[in-house]
Length: 117
Image 1 (cartoon, helix red, strand yellow):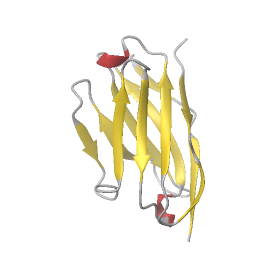
Image 2: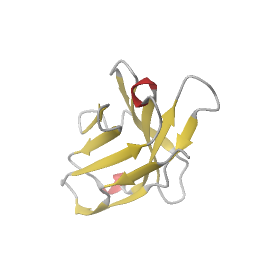
Image 3: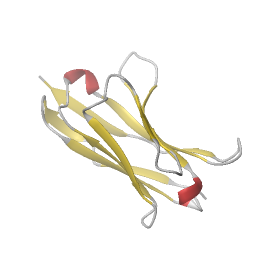
Image 4: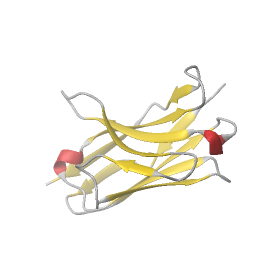
């Protein structure tokens, strides 16, 4: 059974940093596009950052220059380094793995990130 497990969330003051991790049991991990999404209270889920199998990255405009997505294929893990956090970054952050087919689409349960002003 495929599992994606996020970790690294927590409470941080504005301007602080956190690094999220997502360990995925998909195989081969290197062939999956890995994406971080977030959902803030009362808002729709939004894409935060993604990284494909070639290492190409994509970011939401709201996080460009502050967040960095990376992956370690040897550890089946994707990371989201978040710097300069703002209260509006408060949300549940979830990890998604997308493979070659529509069926190969998996989600983690999410981790809470709270940023105080």
